[in-house]
Every structure is written in structure tokens, then in C-alpha cells.
Length: 318
Image 1 (cartoon, rainbow, N blue to C red):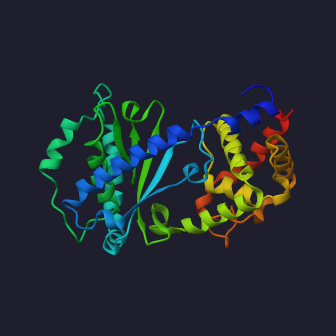
Image 2 (image 1 turned 30 degrees about the vertical axis):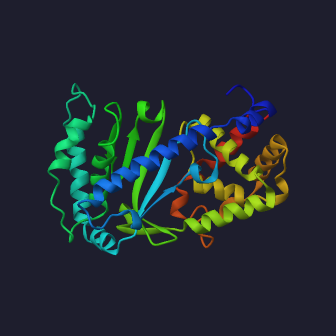
Image 3 (image 1 turned 180 degrees about the horizontal axis):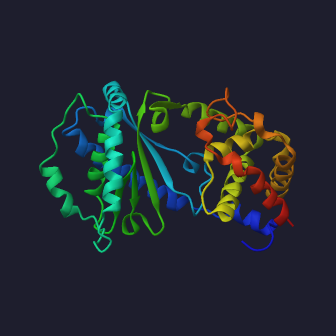
């Protein structure tokens, strides 16, 4: 990144564009999920095109996507029986996680980890019996992993990480492209995400989040999105991980409108100076305005390293 955070660097972050790449990749993801749902619906009556909804989340939603971002999606499923089965199946979740840990500890490190379409073909020919009384979100994730793999090239890797599907496919999507899909429940406007430590669902009101995002853009212009992108890039360069997006969106949303302008670098300096002096403990979450960014579980633990991050920005700002 260099020794200083200067005007050229900040304005360069905003000028960098990945629009064409994102549009092409999202179209591929939508096609891939359509084929997977078609595959699943043939034997799982709880899943079909009419009750599923693919929603981009994280920086895909705001436009703050960077070269180090992961394409994260919710695959929302509107089905009350799956919700009930998931709540009943806590022991099944625990047993599955124990199996994953055992398999990982006892893996053969010399064994090749390629997942080929032909290796998965027998699963399609001889599917597991569908049990309507037990079919839950884990089963969705497991079946989705197999259905997705059937429609990717042999060089792609699709694996199940807890309840999320991770896809790495250089030939299918491009180098360094990382895709994550969370099977969740959907009720028409909000998503229900199963949280292990709560042993239940938490609601994610996507409409509220989008509404606040649009309101801020309407008041201050695209400068709000530019700041999200800048903070994402700088945070990653300091910490080698992307920040929690709801935390970043909420943090910048709570900054006074008068700090934002068309002058990118000047806006950045004003916001960093403001945040270095502000007491952010009462900043509201963009998903739930009844909670602060420190009490909303969806904001993660990003606030713990916030002051350190801002201090680094002040030290390097020239």
C-alpha cells in the first residue's frame, strides 16, 4: 500500500472498476443455482423455483465490492416445514459437525482433493430417500453441494463448511473468485439465519437495510458507496480479512451527511477525523435500528478493533 494514505491512493480505489466481472460472474452463479434447484426439485418437494430466492449479501449488495471480496449469497427458501425440522434437528447438526471434525483429523494428506462430476454421478442416479419429517437446512446444504458440483467443471472445488457452500472455480469463474452460498429461510421480505450458539433463527431484515442504504445515497450521493469501498480496501490491507459489511455500512451511515461530498479524498479525511473523536457506542445498526452496532449480532465483533484501525489511518494519512 505504501507508506502513506494519500489523495492518489484514495481516488485510485474509487476509480478501480470491476463491474463487468461482477455482472458476468453473477449471471454464472444464477445459472448454476437454477440448474441446482431444478435438480433438487425433482426429488425434494419442499424446494422449487417458486419458493426460492437468491439474494446477494455483503459488499455485493452495496456496491462496495473489492478485489479481495467474496461473492456471498443467501439462497432463501420459503417453507415452514424445513424451519420446523431444523429446530427439531439440533442433535443432527451436532452429530454432523462431529463427523466433519473426525473426517478432517483422519484425512489422508496425500490423497488428491479434486471433485469430479463423474464421481458424483451415482448420487444423482441413486439419491437418498427423502424424509419429509426430518428434512432440514443441513440437508438442503448437503444436497445443494452435490447438485452444484454436478454442473461445474472437474477443476472446481465445492465443499460444505458448516451450513454454507463454498465454491472455488478458476476455470468456471476466474482466478481468485470465491463464492459462498448460505441456505436460509425466507418469508417474503426478511431472511431467517440459523445460529448455532442461539440454537435458533435470527431475522435479517434485508428490506430495512436496503431502505437505509438508498436513503443515505439519496441524501449524500454515491459518496456513501465510495467510502464503503475505501474502508473495505484499507481494512483488508491492514488486517488481511474483509470487515463485517453491516458494521461498515452502519458506521458510515451514522456519520453526518455534511461530511460527504463529491471530493473523494476530502470526504475520506473528514470522516476519519470525525470517527477518531466520535463516541460510536450509540451508532445504530443498519439492519435493526433498535440495536447499536455493538449489540447487534449481525455486526459481528468488528468494533473491537475499530479504534486501532482508525489510529492506523490517522498515522498513515499524509
